[in-house]
Image (cartoon, rainbow, N blue to C red; front, side, top):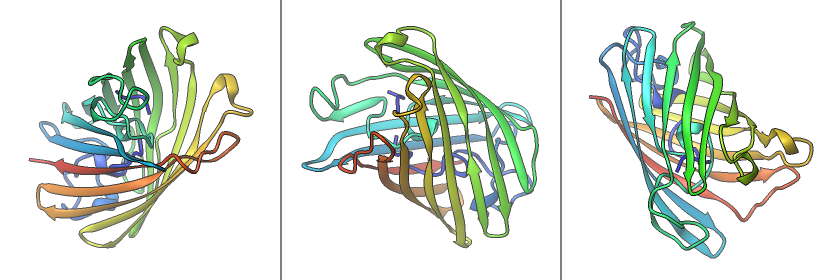
Length: 258
C-alpha cells in the first residue's frame, strides 16, 4: 500500500522527476520538478524491513510511473512509500512477512498530479494526490501541498509538505495528518547524489504528543544515460514522543527514463 515509506528509495523531490529541457542529464541536484511533454519516468523500489530480529520482514515491491502531459503538468501512478515521502517498508505489493507486517499481497495505490509554478534556483510545483492507503479497511485520502526545492551550486534543500485528509474510515486509522519532509542534498560529482532525509509527521488529532521525526540517508548513482540506482535507509520514528529506534527500513530503487 501507500500508507507510509523509508522514502527510502530516492529523493522524493529530485529523484522522482525527469530532467528538464535545459538541465544537463548528469545534473541530479537540479532536475526539473515536472517532466517534459511526453517524458516518462518509471521507478521500481524494493522495500525491506530492518527491525531488530526481523530482517527483511516485510519485503515489498512498488512500481511508480510519471508521464509529462504538458510543459507544466505531470501525472503519476503511485505505489511506493517514497512517493508519499514516508520512511517505511510496507509498499503496495508485499511478498514476505507475517500477519502484522504483510497481512495481504496488495495494499493500495494512488494518483499524483503536479504542476510547475516556478522554475530556477527556487523551484515550486503545487501537487495533489488521490490515495488508497489501504483496502481493508478501505482508506481513501487526498493530499494537498507543494514540492519545493532551493538549489545553490552542488547543494539543494527540498521539501514536499502536504496536508492529508481521510475520506472514509477516519476512526480506523485514516485521520487527517500533516507531513513536512526535508531533504538536504549534495552532488559531490556529476553522477552521484547524497542526501539526508528528515522532517516532521503527525496526525492532527494527536499533534501535541503523537508527532515523530524520521531520519534517513540516501544515495543515488547515475548508472547510464537512462538509468539511476538509489539506495536509502533510515528510521521512520527516530525522534519524538513516540520514538522507536528499533523500527527501521531500507529501499533499493531502479529509476528508468527512456
